Image (cartoon, rainbow, N blue to C red; front, side, top):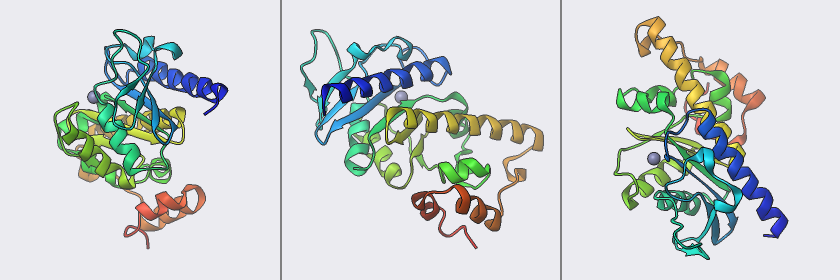
Length: 232
Ligand SMILES: [Zn+2]
């Protein structure tokens, strides 16, 4: 990757980090963002830094095993690098990964109500994200979490991590951020609808015909394939 392209990519990672912080999708030093520089090299946020304070110069490089490349003294790669690398290994099309702790989406997993995210509820979420699966709880920072998350990402661009948070994938860091933002926004709408309706079972779903129509207009072939079985 040329220097100019790497500079542009660093700027997008920083933009995504600042937006995560500004929108309360992370707290303190939580969360991490990475981007693919080439097949074997990645940019990743440093450990222990608030996403609101990440700068282009503070981003670190690592290889596909998570080993740092030319790290400045004292710099430490994000604790969840294994999860990012496992996703990239499973999804060669993905160029950026955002991990955050969106509070409302996470609350659904604490309440055991994550199934709602696999249902066609909001038309644009259904068309742009598809069903959002939930990876089982595993200890943060472990290879076990990395494997569980990567498995859930095989067929999804946004995934809940049970009792922890979420990851979102994209062709660039900003697209990955926007998917994370959309997930949390949907979660807030679900929460409010459940409060009004009294139970998740009373939330209205799209009919098979309504789902087919919105996918026809706005869905990519990948998202359409993820709803196979729910269409007329
Ligand atoms: Zn986390």
